Image 1 (cartoon, rainbow, N blue to C red):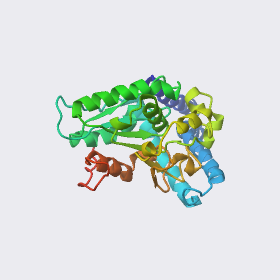
Image 2 (cartoon, rainbow, N blue to C red):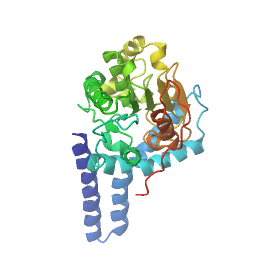
Image 3 (cartoon, one colour):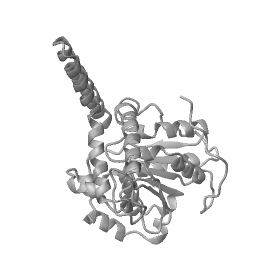
Length: 315
């Protein structure tokens, strides 16, 4: 569903830019033709810029040092370059390019379950899935639907993926979740009482304590991500210290979606700050993949260093 929506959006923008340029080129006004086409194609950069201005005003410095103007600019530029790869290519057109890798019999390697965030799909993880496949690490990446439903609606999807990877590997998996996906995983843990069925949960830019930006939300799942929402309060009340200690939470002072930075931290978890990095771009950072690799290669409650993570494929 989301892939089709993003296909339509991407192609519509390109068609609009081409139509604008063609019309004004025929009128012999090349300056207006190319300027307008660029504004249509690159207009998203302006909206990203507005989000970073809000970050600058709302950030508190409580969980991490306040981001400097230079750090915010670096994060904005990184997101401008990275976001189109995700929202205009991987998710709309390449969401099935890396199918789930589930061996017919256990190969002794722990598996991974990937859970994407709001307005995303499994294509977000394509680069990571390629690296894991090359190392024979089993994995499953889910699509959370309905796209704009309640966060509680995703429990069955996550549970089915975990059961499938458990059956294939005979081991509890590592779960990696971006943004809203981390809240869906917490809801699954609580609703299914599934603590013993997961080895580690790694969240990336998850609004564990809501986000300032969600005050403008209209959809059910986005409203649940408002700061101090009733849904978040009820979820937190059902959680124990040992459960929260199973989490590694990556957060950033330049996250343009989940801010202030402290909202992406979880009490009693291993909270890791990623400086000068925006929300979607955070899901591609080597520090995050390295943490996943440590836990995939570990067998006990702690994650000792056991070899280097595989290099990114050269494609």
